[in-house]
Image (cartoon, rainbow, N blue to C red; front, side, top):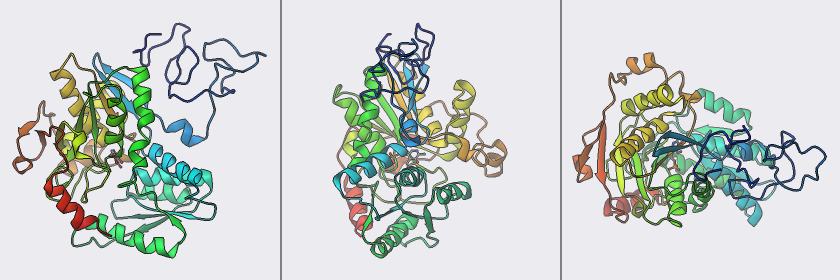
Length: 401
Ligand SMILES: Cc1ncc(COP(=O)(O)O)c(C=O)c1O
């Protein structure tokens, strides 16, 4: 099989996704003895053979879901499509803590999340048998809250935003109180735990083996873990790999003032330590309408049913890939579309909220300073500059606990 083949049938007629024809696991892990299908990875039935190789481990729901599917969208455009991207850092952080003895039986896991990191933690704690308390805010939608509670999590909703740092600051304050009540507690701390970016080394390795060298990595930034971790992993083999951040207006991450954000999952009101600014070559800011429209296009044109941050990453990655046909571009798609189907995934909902675009923009408005950002789709060359003064200021002002 060609090293670069992604999702093309192997000569034995079976999809190659997740499995190389030489029988080695493509995620870099050694393969285990058992297979779900009773077939070896070379397509022959195991049939009484000593199952010593060419078979793949069967793991729990998290292990089976945490790695992305790799999809080719154009000759030079690929996507890493996660079911729930945050499962990967959630599993990696908790299992590392268990191994190190920092998370022991009887301890409670306490975290703040209004999105998929909470879901990742809830799945892992349900499987590993640890109590979980999640501090969230009114942005948490009812179906996700129900799902978290069904997985055994206690969900605390903070209703009053803090004067500086909004709901996120208020959530951190409540988290501190709950942590003290639940002592001894373990706080995974996705915003500043270096194990969050470290978890994505496996994604970089999967991409390197299955796609080959990547020239440009594009993805949304929230905690910074996925983009900084994947970029770092890819740069171990190709230091010139470019990293393109996708953020949204009213997020402080790349120098805009904090404010209410319709597009969720990316952006931040606080400055996470895991956003390493000198990782990024370019920054884009997208509005909700552009991201929602691009999510629709991703589904229509590529049959990929993903969430709105995937649409945002798709719009930027597609522009990058078309502008540089000689460069290989990889986009990170963080989650699937089911959670958003009755809101941003519904054209009637988008029209009712004034977020329906008759046509998607074909290129961004390029600025030389965050102060010139206009809204809709803005772009700035960041040039791997270190954490700027505004971020240090925001950091000290809002992160101090
Ligand atoms: C749906 C979705 N997309 C993108 C991101 C950004 O990822 P990261 O926190 O790794 O920067 C998040 C973060 O929670 C997310 O939930």
